[in-house]
Image (tube, rainbow, N blue to C red):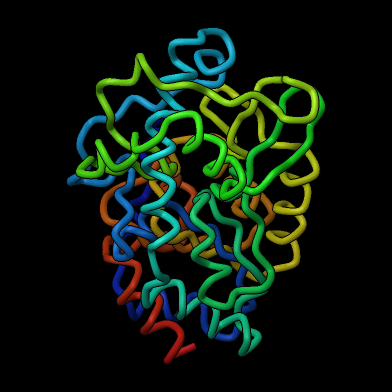
Length: 277
């Protein structure tokens, strides 16, 4: 017996038909932020990337120094980005009562900047730093001041770099960079971001499941669903009988669970949905 999956590819009209009259939980990925100038990891035109793992960051001082040197440059770029039409459309739909909330795999805070209020930052936030020993949290701006004092003019010397999706940047020469430790206990500082190889906090996952359960349908926008942290919500929605609509440029790991998939950009599609639903 064949285990082939029926192709759910559809049109924008099909998406509207499935979602009309339903209250939506929304799961977003890096594709939602590409129109704001933040590249994604796995889009059709994305270059190959090898993100640093949690094990590398905590286990090797060279990796950790290399990361902080790049982040010292890259996080500034993310802070200058602005929400695009897709972010604004989701905020409008939340205000209208069509969208219950957003579960985002992004760390850029652009949903909040656009006006969305009920946002679960599944993978953390680029603007905070946590100590792995005492769990003290500080603003990334505070750490920037300390890193600048330890590494004067470093960011200016490497200003023309390629920016990566997690507030990272491609910087080659980092052996001379000085890393800051926790000012409270001297422990290891890490961006308040879930790394590859790290687990999303259980409380955050449970809130996301609850949001999916409260919705009448799940809309996925701009995610290839390659990582389990996002794919599990698609599987959960499908298993509980809720329609799943996926809008993404290219195929995703969740397509077999979708009611409809639309291969399209998120900004234009979400804008249309905000005006239609």
